[in-house]
View 1 (cartoon, rainbow, N blue to C red):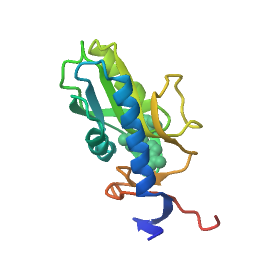
View 2: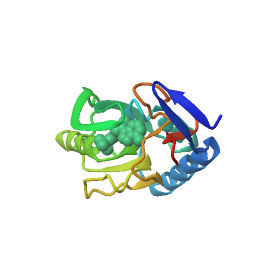
View 3: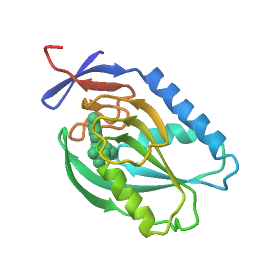
Length: 182
Ligand code: IMP
Ligand code: MG
């Protein structure tokens, strides 16, 4: 099905399940190469959106590793609010750990800024960021995103963990907001 409806909006197929899986495999390969000599990196998963990415990535990543979760909220509907709230904080000792932050999407970067600040407060000096999607035209930080699945324009997408007001996270392909004139 190429057009789907979530709440009041229609979305059309944008990235197939197969293409997404190839993107995730490629991120896992790069991480395996870059982290081959590191002991037990900690994947820090940004809930809720990154749960599917984390699950797939960890199946493709064959080195010993650990996983932990944080949760922040900034989005309401299809707009970022710019005000990032911490809902689940960091529970692990990350002071001497190699951390790989897993994000579903980096948009303005406000959420990322909050996570980086949290890691610094917990005395972590060694972190990198992996994100399935990146919106370079919306990004407001200068901090590099080390591993990116795909750069996309400033469109609103759902699926593969990403939601529109709670719906769409369980879709294994990604869909983009459909404007009737396009
Ligand atoms: P940022 O703080 O503006 O970078 O936004 C980060 C969060 O906003 C992501 O982790 C998502 O939860 C959400 N978000 C950003 N863009 C989209 C989108 O296109 N669809 C669904 N959620 C999005
Ligand atoms: Mg998110």
